Every structure is written in structure tokens, then in C-alpha cells.
Image (cartoon, rainbow, N blue to C red; front, side, top):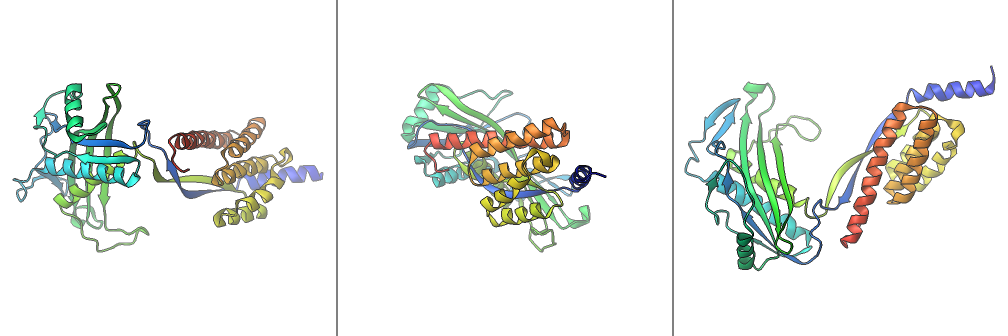
Length: 345
């Protein structure tokens, strides 16, 4: 048996035992909505709109049964929910620091109105609201609904739990060009259960309906702010560890943040003669360069990995590589956008 055949057999053998390791990181992402300039004065208002079928303001779900909240029947839950959503948005915008001033109108400034269709504000109304707040941009909570559910141990066989589902529509009105800069429907679910982060049972007390709605709606406002302002977001990347000692050592360097040391090892296996191992090495080098914020080299090396995967007709590797190349291209665009908006990368 030739040495070449033995070498090829070993490469084939180890490729079937490759480990794919998730690597959590936080990335600074630009908002999806570009307001073009800094130092804006922003006003936040509630449209106070409801659809005719939205009739569950005073109800919630208890152990899969619809129940009327008799204790808080006189409380305007809709106003409470909108107020906390606007407060959450305002807090997030102020924390960003890119806005000069953020004004929040009273939640019931506009009288409650219902219709089958949600239409946009008239520009005359937008101008009047902005004039009264001395603001440049108007952000409207067009409509907001929320529903609380709670489950006991006897109903589920699990520790007690609770959740609030919020459904909202947000709109950004820019009077300068008489245009709607953003219109976004969002659905968020905030969940509480009896487990800690390690999935161990706890004695955590479930929040009541009103407290849960307040928290969930504030988070809904904060989540919408992420469309307007940059924010740190937790994402996951992946690298590969074939059962080869050098790759394991490179993985140790990854976990320690020693990217250049990992690259030095992986370059040994990058030549085409290492076939499947070379695909993994090239992929991992691209990952290391991304972690160093060197997007040009990351894209170059993921390209090298793709070229070899195509040459070897390795469909599984190619699928993984194409997905990561898309991520890298998006990340490159995000970093360029942050630079254009004068945000630190």
C-alpha cells in the first residue's frame, strides 16, 4: 500500500469525525433605519389605534382557560402598555446618545379610535406634533396589543411559568421629505419560567399580569430602538475541529483569543494536498480573521475554502461555507455603515 494511499485514507477517516463548535460573540450592529444625521430631536407619540377585533384588554389566560381580570377591570391596560413601550423606546434612544433630545407625548394624547384599516398620519398632524415638541422626527406607536398567560405546575407538570405576547406596529415620520422612513410590525414574546440559566429548578415567583405587561411592553420599545440605533447583539459563529491534534490546539487558541497563533497552526493544513482538512483549515482561518475584525482577509480565506470545496465536490462543506460567506459579507456591510454613521466599530 503506497504512502499516498495511506495518507488519503487517514484524511477520509478523520473527516467523518469532525466536531463543529459554536462560538458566542457580541457584535455591534447598525440600526436597520438610517436617519441620515446626528443630533436630531425626536418625539414619540401613541397613535392610540385598535382594530375592532382586539377585545381582550381585560382578559388573560390561566392554565389554558380565558379569564377576566376582575381585579383590574377599571385599569386602562392599553394605556399602561403603550406608556411603557414608549418609555422603553425613549430610554434606549437616550442611552444611545446620538439624539439631542427625546420627547415623549402622553399616551392618551390622541383619542382612542378604531377601524378595519390602519392608515398613516396626515402630514399636517405630523407637523403640528413636531412643532409642539420642537422635534425633527416623529416616532409613532401605531398600535399595540398584549396578552398575558400564566401556567401552574398542576397544569403543565413543570414549574410555574408566565408569558406576555406583544404585537405592535411602529412608524417613523420624516417631515423633511414628507416620507415614512420606517414602518415595522413586531411580535415579541417575553417568557418567565422556574428554571435558571443552567436549567435547574428555582423558586422564582411569576410576575402578575400588570407587572408582566409593564416589563414586556418596555422591552418591546427597546427592541424597536434597535432598528434605529446601533446595538450590541449576541450572535454565534462556528469553527471546525477535525480529530487532529493541531486543530485541537488551534481551538484552544481560539478560546483564549490568540488568533494569530491559531492561524499559524492552521496555515500548515491550508494547502490543497490536505483536501478535506484544508477546507476546514481555510474556513477556520476566515473565522480567526473575522474575530480580529479583518474582514478583507476573512472574505479572502472563505473564498479559498469555497474554491476547494467546489473542486472536491464536497456539498456539505460548501453549504456551510456559503452560509458563512453570506454572514461575512453582511458583517462587512454593517461595519461600513457604522463608519459612515460615525459610530465606533
